[in-house]
Image (cartoon, rainbow, N blue to C red; front, side, top):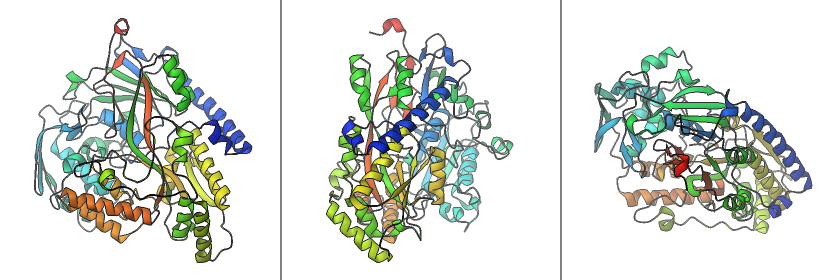
Length: 569
């Protein structure tokens, strides 16, 4: 899913020096203003903020934060990781991920996938948050709605393994021809275009969640827009959503596994991505966990905070716009930009947090191959930092474009403080090494997504998190038919290799296809890698059982519980 630009990176003094005095002063002003605005938003995020505590043992609830307001909670339209995290708490599909990050039963108590046929048997006690039964027809309606061309879902492609799904989505066949049907209230049958090796992983993803047709129609086009315009199938239900300020989840008493959900409520009392604000909230015992920057680590260790770390599975990069008329369609310009920057500098000299790695490929290092990790079996091509070579490519680009000087190039980015610094960092690097004027277009997360979708950029600081546990979730990102391919990169050979990986049951054949895709993306300079993100975080010692992972909701509270303060060492 589409990632917001990280705010966890901390710039060292030596790296900031490279930005120049004017840039640093501008950044400091922006950071100060945003800090103030975020703090003011935080202190008004709840009617009872003054009484908010990280852990409320008596009422069995915890308070946490969310980095951004979720842009889209209609699962047929959602594309971003923030919305996916919220949906992961309040919705559930046929299958889900367990505490060991393995696929397990969800609303379906059992399933069979044989050849081109998949059958799911729903639990008898599968219920919506209003107590009504969840039926197989709720899945049929949700999936067909996503595929409806009138909806324009950017994730419709994830249903393409189903018989006639792609043809229905392009308007070539009717929606009722899609190979999904309710045999009865509790039996869902799915016909696939051909056998595939990963369908069980797909159905755990949020776009495969069910929707009640009756409830959907009752919202008059505002499904998912407010807390009351959603019907919930998961362990929690949203009882309050003050946009941009706070969200409250309460335990869903009708959830089939409610006995194993220990918390009665999760209070997202603050929606902010400012790390200083979050650190102060954690120090003041207002939130139960916090992600740390490099500058915070020493103090955190001195205070003996309980620290953990994990790789969140995402990869971040500069993406190019390949639409006609854009300067970034020129391959030699893209090569010039790649060779003009050191892909390890951002990680080694700027971020300096455990777990962060330079992004050498669109395929993160944790993905599995045939017998080892994919990247061990298929090493990513090496990209050297070579300013002289970069300038040679820039001159070739000028000749091909028939220009003597480049006009300003637009870099779209988030408005978070660190995204602002990151974009200015690249602005300075490309100015210093290539003499290019990079105009930064700062936008809030929701608006960045909108501008990416409309193609209103030359370059964009972007990122992608996995939808399911298979390399295909990254491999098809730049396929021509994928609406998350915001730069409209179009390569027939890449498309062909994606089709091979989609359709083959032979893991070696699939991994060979992914290897060829990796080479194409490198040769065509479809992106410039920034980093694979690791997180270091502190957790209130009274809260146990929080899961943080690469697949599914990044932070999972479904097995979290509170222990008395007297039992904490």
